[in-house]
Length: 258
Image 1 (cartoon, helix red, strand yellow):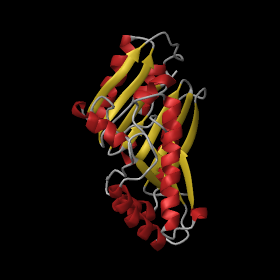
Image 2 (cartoon, one colour; image 1 turned 90 degrees about the vertical axis):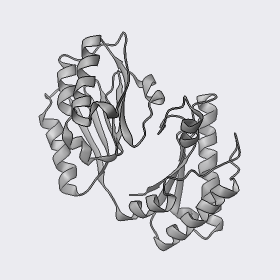
Image 3 (cartoon, rainbow, N blue to C red; image 1 turned 180 degrees about the horizontal axis):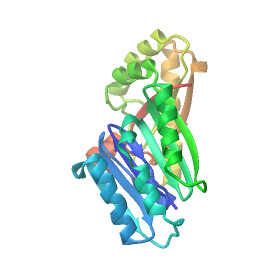
Image 4 (cartoon, rainbow, N blue to C red; image 1 turned 60 degrees about the horizontal axis):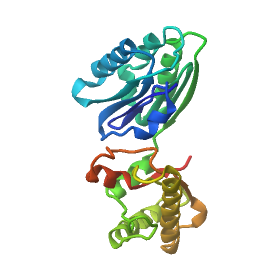
């Protein structure tokens, strides 16, 4: 039973009552998208009100539905406790509330913050809830990778894993950065828009990530330092309802390894 909220600056919050809704979620860096399925209108309104209170109504995108799902006792109240201002300290994050199971992902500034946020979440719940702290301390090298990519899109030929010249130019810069980072491991993650079959898009996203890995290897980056994965359309950063949004969703992401 998942409910999902995605992204302020760029915090990502996930509240779980209906997994299928997750693939439809999208946000720009200044938005929080609340998506999923909850059991009734009162729960829906209460959760949205809390998110708007914390983040500001102008930043909240409502994609939350009502459907035939069953929530644990007092679930809405616990969810509202979890949506607290401290979540703004998490970047590149995700709060996943799937019934009684809570998972918090993302990056924070230091280890003390990592432990404190998870501890505060645990103490706000009753013992029937299980909390998984998947937060990690942000690495300085990740900032360097982000600055190199600079929110640009690595372009491919339509429906293929063939890099376009503009994409190769960006990767030339990325290769130079990776070589400066030495033996740091990096994951290359491929993403697509939602057009077409999901399974096909997942395969395509991995093929594109692999193409990036091969290109970087040809530029001198050790292949052993690069892993690849493909998320297909499951982690959009913009709406798939517009050409511009779909273009932004067709992207390559670079994540520093642990």
